[in-house]
Length: 459
Ligand code: SAH
Ligand code: SF4
Ligand code: F3S
Image 1: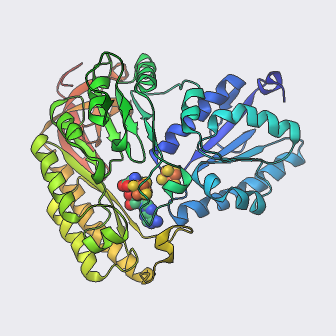
Image 2: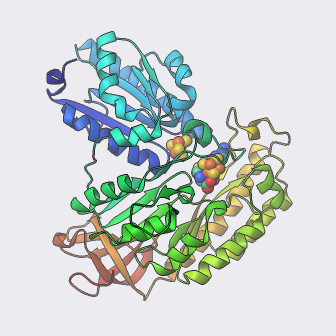
Image 3: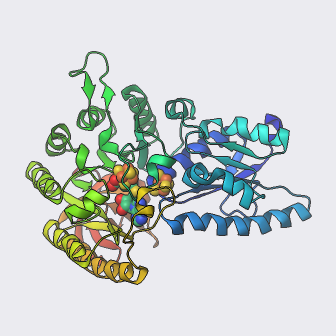
């Protein structure tokens, strides 16, 4: 496949599952394919290349890939009948974890490529075309991945920026240390360069990403204070970049929430007062079995310190119900902790037994209907907290970043510091600005507001 041939009207469809890091990776893959002449196709139907960027975190997520592959197989066969072609690539965490199984189970797949090998996509595509065979690429080499990925083209004023990959924590339920490899931090210079390229494209808000984003460490640039920086120093440094108005980071781990980061949250106004800090469970016994490396009390005190430093902060979390050996008493502990902390939003999941993780082999697995019942109770509590939090916004004046057009003519959708969507009447020329909105009502998934000014306002 010569570059010339690739340049003739080719199109790629990418379906992204899982976390924000996959969303970021998909954008980077598109960035690599565009110079080869690929346009983004809205559906797989007419695409020459289909990439499934997959997630392995829970069984359901992983199984979706195989049902998608079934559909693609029929699509590919139909295309081939009429003389067309379609290449199928499986990327992401399922590719990393089940590479060989995918090639065996789904011969329609042309290439299986793990999360650390995306920078090699053009070369692998060429090789696949040359050899007309399957390609399996699942080595770990994170630094290389970032160095060699093309710059991204982003749309809209808010963008993700991956600063850390991988995980060394080995929670006993989780596949991430196996699918994403060990913790690696990107260097300050590379992060700053990417942030600058984003602001040059009109980005005003960056969300720093990492499986354990607050485990990020980096050598400080020459002439700066301190030798080794943590995430707090990095955020303060990024806040100096012209054009960046809002900084977020996700996902943090309670073990890595150091004083420097808490101080930065308290002092740096560009850091948004919204922190995703999962605890998973509210029982010390379960936290220990999960290998989370801290107690309930550690988490409680940590939240108190963060709230003392930044009184307007809101917390979001993740929870797992029905981890092996979780009794109803342990689960009551989770409910009690949720009551005590008060979450602005949260994700909660039934424990999913993942092959190869220690949790999968543990005795005292919890029955599915019990998990279901616990999840239902937890969801009612968390949903109530979320609704209360949203309702408490009514009457307030909030700075919102106007991100996109609304569904109705003359309407834009902005985001509060707490990531709530706000629908306002505003001209399109205001897209990308931060404006003040008076919050007037709540709908199930958003807030309704009215702009108080007609331009740049509170940041
Ligand atoms: N690094 C983050 C979590 C990344 S995975 C942290 O440590 O908090 C995202 C979420 O998926 C987790 O917080 C957890 O709630 C959920 N999760 C991970 N593995 C799971 C499993 N086997 N079953 C159910 N939920 C799981
Ligand atoms: Fe998974 Fe635990 Fe690592 Fe989070 S900290 S990615 S839950 S192993
Ligand atoms: Fe899923 Fe991999 Fe992210 S398993 S949650 S896509 S790191």
